Amino acid sequence: MSTNYFEEDITSLHDALVNQKTTAAQLTADTLDQIQTKDKQTKAFITVAADEAKKQAAAADTQGITTDRQLAGIPIAIKDNIITDGILTTAASKILTGFIPVYDATVTSRLKEAGAVLVGKTNMDEFAMGSSTENSYYGPTHNAWDLDRVPGGSSGGSAAAVAAGEVVAALGSDTGGSIRQPAAFNGIFGIKPTYGRVSRWGLIAFGSSLDQIGVLSRRVKDSAIVLQQIAGQDENDDTSLPAPVPDYLAAMDGNIKGLRIAIPEEYLGEGVAQGVRDAIEKAVDTLKKLGATVDTVSLSHTKYAVPTYYLIASSEASSNLQRFDGIRYGFRAKDVKNLEDVYVRTRSEGFGDEVKRRIMLGTFSLSAGFYDAYFNKAAKVRHLIQDDFTKVFADYDLIVGPTTPTPAFKIGEKVNDPVTMYMNDILTIPANLAGIPAASVPAGLVDGMPVGLQLMAKPMAEATIFKVADVFEAATQFYTQVPTAMKGEK
Image (tube, rainbow, N blue to C red; front, side, top):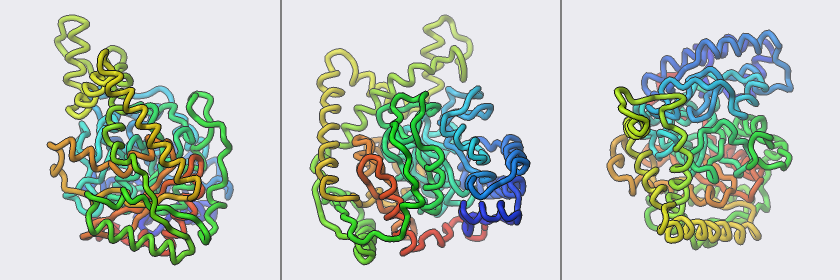
């Protein structure tokens, strides 16, 4: 294997392709070899699309790779809830067994237009419902730093694939922290853009008012390059925003002097492990030394974020998942007696326990007599959480804090305690409820496991996140560290 993703990034690979030191075909072959070797440990992929990837690589070489096409010939992985024409797409659920889409998601088509090579579909919590990638019909993915620990979720497969050096970058989706939390657990960068910045057309919906596609990569710059390509308005998605996409790389000028940063006191309170607190305080000191000013603020409604999120997300999920009925595609129960039997048994056998739990919670919240008491009240609290952010952003450029309360936990440790699992997202959920951009950048190790510094910015201010994350990355150089479980697997 001649390509080592622990030492390369998109820029270096692009330069090698332009200068004909390698070819897209060779780079793709190297990537497929990396996946074949390392995925035996991480189990990050559900589907490896080797034949399709080789065709795309050959096309990139034939067309020629020019300096202005930074993603041409670059292998990238796609989370398995993002539609890919002709490639199995399951959302990690039994109910979508054998589903081969006949069209591409907007983000998929935009990557193809840029000449990127799509090497496969990554594992995830079923229908993106989970925080550990243990809720997958295909089994759990393993953390690249400790194979006995979870990679986070629901984009755990994408995070583990990047952290293990199987690919240089991957797409994920984030409904309540599903990009940032696995990025933190695996010691990589992950960004959830502003709601509407990236088209959701072709993303299998979980919570339609919360879902957003984003990027995971070892280097901050790589996520900026990928997001630059996939962002922007899409006529197929009425929720995509018409605002122009700025030049993210130009914003990364290495200077954060005078930047105003806020730390919510609620994000360093009870439940946040002392080691995580220490790592975040050290990270904040680094930002101060780099020229930023830092103050403590309050986001007083944070304590209501988890119940608010699970009422809204589960209600939306109960509606979105009605389409999976065993009639047109995917799994269908056998030996059924009538139409009702088809519906009941297909869903009973096809959905996993966590998906069923959230469908029932959502259906209950939307039912007559309970809508006002639960869903409507949650919608009102959501506005209070949004107002908290608006007030802080009137005086500050960025909000920072820990991405997760603890480092990655062991596989099986919390699987039978859903409420404890839900609370793991308490620090990431507010950004989704507010619709603001947020990212996680590695902030060091606690007991040998990575933890993340979360960066949250004003709506449409992804450039601010990239600017700060890039400067912080340069100061700490965490990306030079090889995950413990991958040492010897370069």
